[in-house]
Image (cartoon, rainbow over the protein chains, first blue to last red):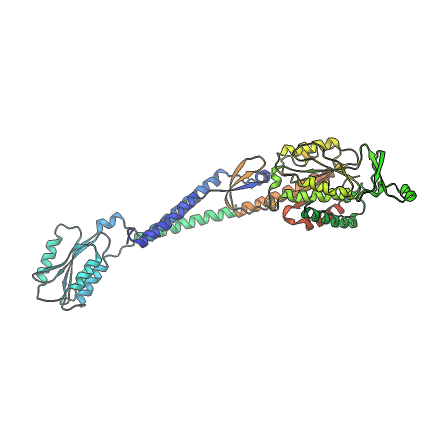
Length: 220
Length: 296
């Protein structure tokens, strides 16, 4: 997910519009008979009041910015560094077999900036899909696979290691109906705490601060 | 006369009857204004009686002899004149309906009552500060009084109002009464208002008209208030607590105004512009009937 997806972009634009409108909001001009009573009530804008207003505006802007960030779920630079290059060696005995399902799960679990290639474990080894980050293309490649010919898992693994030579964070996933433990290799994928959670926590903290400021304003 | 004007005069008549029932012959129900007020002037001639002429000026002996009604005409300075001083400053234009609208209606009513009680009434002409308007006498002059007051607009500076007051203060003689209709939203308050009058307790009746916005503003958050009088601007960030504080300050200021008037023996009636004509009349009659001030 990212800003290039229309749904997320719409959310981002809507969320960004709120602080812009807040900042653009001007004081309402009203005519009064006299400032005599206003001065008696000592309702002029003191330094603390001005600071309070600026703080409040700042918090609201930060709050909506944080919500916008959470809504669009962006990915940080660390994601790029941690991105893996994966090769799935698919050794399926029949269509929709256990190996095919494991391969699809691997595709579904792909993160941003990660690339994957799909190899068919037969002799000679066939590249079903070259390195790509397009999940649709990868899924279609898995669906197209028709088990035929001589199965050769070893040659598939060798080609995968050759393809991953020099790649950052290499990972070979062997999805084989013959080897039941194949799927466990890709289940090591570590689910990290999404950055959005931290942003959401920050937004809640800002909410609390704004609430404190607001209640203070009410009880002045 | 417009239909609205005719209706207003009809309501004045109704209010006059209610006022008479409430306080009898006293002018505006104030102590010290009981009894007939005759023009202490020299008779200069006679004219045919016209509707609205004061019966006290009718030559009854001639009526008995010749069976005709003739009104005696007089010349000279008449005592017992009521001077209507309507605050025409821009601040009176605030409110829905505006303070000026209610003040105008009240001025018509009070002027009508004075005419009905046999007093002469004078109000400032349009567009000039301190000039004396035409002296109106007799109930038939009510329509002229109405026209003179309805021609007024709230577009003048504060100084204009004080110019009117100073001029009226100079013109006032013993037995005369000045009726001041204003919001009194001036820093000097009653002190400056009463300054031109030699005997404020005997010569003044103040009707203070305030708008709901003056007493209970409802604006919240960022507001830039512009004083329509001074043109100054005040930037405010209003909260519910601030509005409560303002209401308390406004109530305190009204109380101080009442106390200042009480200390000087000046009768004061405080009204809100959105109260409506009939409740305003009832309140006016009630307050004036119950007034037991320092007036001799």
